[in-house]
Length: 425
Ligand code: FE2
Image (cartoon, rainbow, N blue to C red; front, side, top):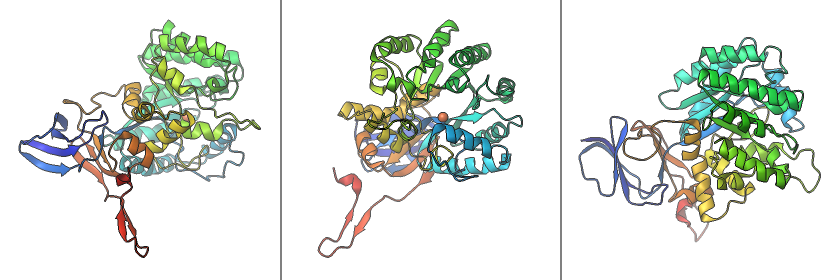
């Protein structure tokens, strides 16, 4: 007797007509035509069942703060950082918790099962850290929230940042972050990478640094990050987020750099919505795209996961917790338009990002946690094309969010019909 069987599902690997049986919160079988007894049965109707969306890069302490205390007029990363500096002293722990909880509701509805959120440690009161540790606990039954200690103002540039970052880790923040391109000099940036990687190595933690989020082709802290990763034996536990300067680097240098990143097993986390919005702001025309070299990194065997970074905050005034929006933008900016490339973009917001975050029990195989999303789409490419509606979200075999199918009732004379976008193809 199973607890739940989801019948007639399409799976991300292309199989169709599959049944997923769940017992005690785990996937017990994935086969066609399961006939065993079950307490609950759900008909997927041939639609796609995917493991949850994973957001490997987010800022939950800033989310939904748009307009507080003012808007970002220039649209640049640097004005965003300045604006965040104005908000930090006036917001309370309760403000951050309230916004983060609202965001997690939205994320759950959109099928996100895990989020890696950076949390600013350049605050002597550690308000963001206090708030997000509380939120991590409150949402743990439906979202895995992994926190990164992020010295936003520079671990060397800000006089108390290192001490506060260590305090945050002592309080239970999971991952070590950094922002070498925001330090005062290239030398300080490299030194910050060394200090923070040593901190992670000493504590057995993962590293995820904002790295080279710039159009400056000479911003090459990813080289130092790869070097320190190897020196300290951190292979497979380090990610470089953004890496936008790589877009503008000389091809000859990149031909050396990418193999070094691959050799160190450093992962890459571009954030397509934010990169296309914030980069290239100093350009006239032609205007650079500012997304890192996704295809080349992937082809070198490097894990590349797409993150969302921001939703309605000082850096980005749009967003709706939809990782399919993120995949859609990454696909376009990276010109990843072949069938294989588009399917790969779906992996970049699901299983690849789960691997980067080191999540256990992720996937749609027997023995994995019974966490999955039923989408109103026939396959992964259609899911990206439509940014498909999430019909049901399951966590440990229990439905935790549901919605009616999205259809349109056409009322034009002579054309009365009900239209389902997912049936167009
Ligand atoms: Fe970020």
